[in-house]
Image (cartoon, rainbow, N blue to C red; front, side, top):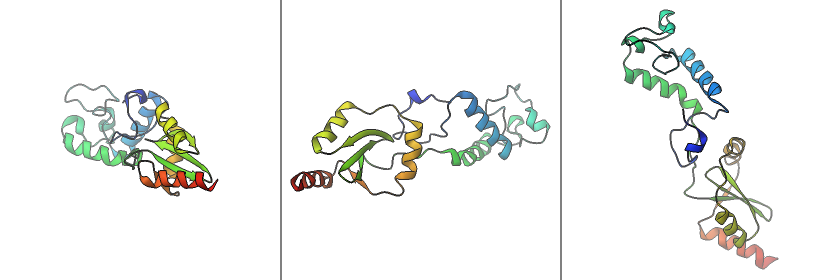
Length: 170
């Protein structure tokens, strides 16, 4: 388990689940273990002695990674498959983007909302202010919204031309 402050969301690969606390994360992992016959001992959710079966194996709810009936590689592969539904999306763009809404450009980088700009200078000010802390709700909203909207890549000439054109029209 890793805490949000230790991560660089969007830049890191292989992040799974967003939980408010350790208890919720462990509950989700226990549910996966139950659904996919994973070993709670191997997952670190149950203390077991070396070579001893976990409680779930005694109930025939674990395939036996705890006692060598299933290899560590097989167990890990099944765990990754089970966790695939919990995988967080990596930032799909090479840099920051903008989402156009009339005259406003909503600036986003690595799943973080930087603010709204109406000019090239305002975009630069947003970049200078730095990226705010990752926010779960913003991430969830953006994952859905970016599938439905057209984005402006902020490193491209297109952005600068678009902003300049809007100012010359005003």
